[in-house]
Image (spheres, rainbow, N blue to C red):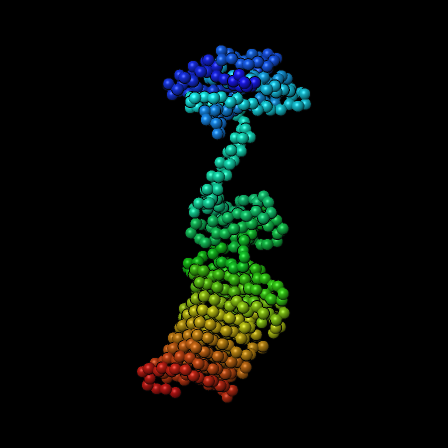
Length: 517
């Protein structure tokens, strides 16, 4: 100590109290820190002091902690406020809750100016003690006056950061991140910056699948509110928009997927919104894909742009036979992209895929393809593809209007329907309809063909236990397929006119037959 110009020591009273604290295991409670000017000069403190030479300020202690990498060293800290000054700090002391001076130290001359000098500032002061038993000291603070030191803040930031890193890196770390409960709650949240993201847990309740990320688009003032399907418009006009890459899902909308409730009106809105997410670049339009998961029920005609929207499952659409279908069909495939050669350039995505369409009574016609543009090259009704779909209980699955030609059906089935297709002579309706690995069973005649340019190709599929393959008034049909019936009384192909042709090959299995024609 003699070799150190500046040092701190325990006073005699402090030493006695610490010794007693070690015996009784009741720590000395340090409450106060004081500074003084040493009566105007430097001096060396002594153990018998009970007060500072000339105290200039006293206040609550701010921090008391172990010194890192220094065993039995304790650091005490105080902060002299900016509102006092006009003297030089040369001494420092620590007092307990009884007012006794426990430790004292001298301090390098440090000027504490008056606020009126134009240089008022807070002054951080520290005293370090060597204590045999650190546990014998206890910090008692007034929370109203404690100010965190920079080191304390830095240390706490490091601790919090490490803790958060461990929490978020854990396998279940996602549970620590807040989520917006539903679309109703999202409507109450005002974004604070452009691009702000928010995670929404559900559309309406925890049981639905309407979750997803939304972001604030400050540049958008026109997109309509579709109740959280893709956009929520706040009362102030700000817009939360769902983060969408390409595919859309009906459950985002909160729509009923039990198949028990008529969702016709809401479903039409989803079809219209989905069309806006198709993209056109380099003269080619890419369809938006709307996934119909679950069970949906409609009871009126729905129209969608077959050149902009594709419907995919897995899901079931029930068409209520008691519904009102003003066009005579459950679905109208029409409209246009406005892109040149749309008939040929945007058919890479099947218009229907992995879906089940069902009805009762064989009274409803399901699909009607028609081009309303007047331009044969800009035709959404032509050259569409259907993949892995099933149809049950309809009168006719598909009928053609103007331009509704060239459809291709893969790995699909039609059960208990009167007809798969009714092809009539319409403007701009020619070429072929192709079927690959499909099955028609338990129905009437699969095809009604009355178009001199109409051609149907049925390959690698099966026709089982139905009235027959086709009633042809005008047109051509080629069948290479498994054919299976019992008790046949009707012609397999019924030719109704002179301009009719058919080619049939494959295996025919006719069981328990009594009369053939």
